[in-house]
Structure formats: C-alpha cells, structure tokens
Image (cartoon, rainbow over all chains, first blue to last red):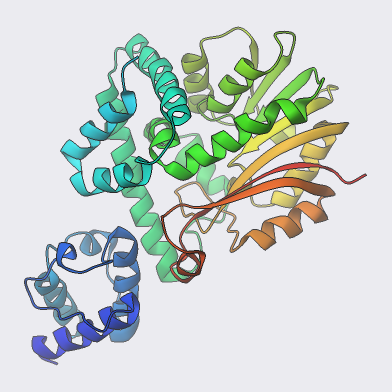
Length: 81
Length: 301
C-alpha cells in the first residue's frame, strides 16, 4: 500500500472517530488544524489506526509524531512487507 | 497570599504549553473558594518543599513526569481495555515501596489536587458536607491519606477535641503528609489497612481514591465497616476508567461501584459524579474518559 492510500485510509478513520465528515488531512496537518484532535482523542485515533492496519505502536511512537505525514510514515513502515 | 495556582500554571506552560492551556481552560470559571483553598494548600506545600531545600519547580517536574505516566497508562488502557497492573504485590514493589517512583508520583498528585477541576469538585463536596455527617462525632479516620489535603480540611472544620487518625501503606506518602500538615493533631499509622487493628470505632471514615488500588475492594469496604461506629458515615471516592501506574481494580461505570457498596452493606446517602473532561457523558463513555465518583455512605440499618 503506498503512502497516499495510507493517508486516505487514515483520513477515513479520523472522520469516523471524530464524527466529522469535513476532515481533509494532508501530510502537514497537525492537531492544531483539526477540531477535537486533542490529547484525549489522539489516543482513540491511534488505537483505531492500530486496529484498522493490524499494527501496534509503542507509547513513545504515539507521542513522537509532529504531523500527519510522520504518522503516515510510521504506519507505512509497519505494514510494508 | 501568592496566587500559587497561576504560578504553577505558568511554570507548567513553560514546559508543556498545550497541557497548561487545557488546565487553564478547565479552571477559568471556578469560584473564589477554589482559589482560596487551593492557594492555601499550595502555600503549605511550598513551606514543606523549602524545609526539604526544594522549590515549586521540583513539584512541577514531578507533576509533568506523572502526567507522562498517565498518558502511557491511558494508551495501554485504550489498547487493551484493562489497567496494565492487576496485582497489588507488583504495584507495591514498583510504586509504593519504590521511593524514586512514589516521590514524584505523590508530588505530582499534590499539584493535581487543584489543577484538575474534578479534584476540586471532589474536595468541595467533602468540605461542604463533612460537618453535617460528622454531627457530634469524636473520632475521625482517614485511610490512604496521600498528601494530607482531606485531613487538613477536616481539622479546620471539626472540633478541636476530635481524634484524628491517618493510615497509609506508603512511607513516602506518610512522610509527605506529615511534612505538609506539620501538626501534632494527627496520629499517623504506617500500615496496610487490612493489618490496622485497634479497638476504636470511628464516627467518620474518609477513604479517597483507594478502592482502585486493591485487588478486592469488597474486602476493603467490609474492613471499613469494622472501623465505623453504628451511626457513623464514610466519605468514599474512586475513579471510573482512570488508568494510573498504581491502579489495579477497574470500575467500568458508576453502577459497578454502587453495586459493590450495597454488597458490602452500605447505603449511599449522597453522591457526586464528575467527568474529568468538559464533555458530554455520552462522549465520556465512548472515549472511556476518567470519571470521578464520590459518595457519603452509611451502614445499612
């Protein structure tokens, strides 16, 4: 799966988890750009991503991403064969 | 008096601006009572820190370190649906009997008392109702007194002739409570409550945030009944969905707590439930957000 497809699927997870159809993520998007993406919902988003892609992150990874691009990179590395 | 709350928020903001902004937002509508009680407790805390050649910066470091633990525990909780620890022996070894961890954890909790609005609701509920339920009592017992805030307020509100006993399993915790309270009115007991035996019957027992630290909360509740006089009251608080490094018993909702109280032979006289985020109860359930449960209870007659 290429990173654009990962980004698209992550976008769908954000829409579903945050109940907001308007969300349009790009690689530079940060928590400040998305309504209701805060420390509370971040953990929910990450766990939803883990379930969707069948992967696991460490606590350190979860708290390290500065933007959506870094999150997508991290997912892509874990799902690449 | 120094506005310690503002001072602490500024210090936290310098290290973690986003966290401080959220705290500030949650605290901005609170009353003068909140600032008075919070600042007077933090003043005592700062005096204690100075006696140890420490400053408030130490407290802030501890608070931020504890907050990091909380994020990690929350991640594991959401991933697995349960607390990461389930054994008392394990937590006793890694936290209660480990001064390195227990020290920053306890100092972090001291700051949390007035930086988290749900903790303010918890102490306010206690302060507003203690005298009514203590009535003409003589003996007050606190189990798991932590940093001493509750017994400190009880000493202000109850008659000078009251006997105050405080039992705690952790030496670090008792040292902190002794240091902050700096009083000879309290008898401190370093004991596991299950090993605390005396012939006293208490007119009032406070047990704040302890049930979630034991494997068998029902057994603990029955132990409280043994210490409570026939017409005595107990103030109990415990959180729902609140992962911490030393929490082992998970309450999924308030009904589980109510059921346990009934099973232990207690009647709920008055209760208060506060969600730890400014969100609806539906959202709190959905995101498994910590909820504070507090109640005044008495033995079923």
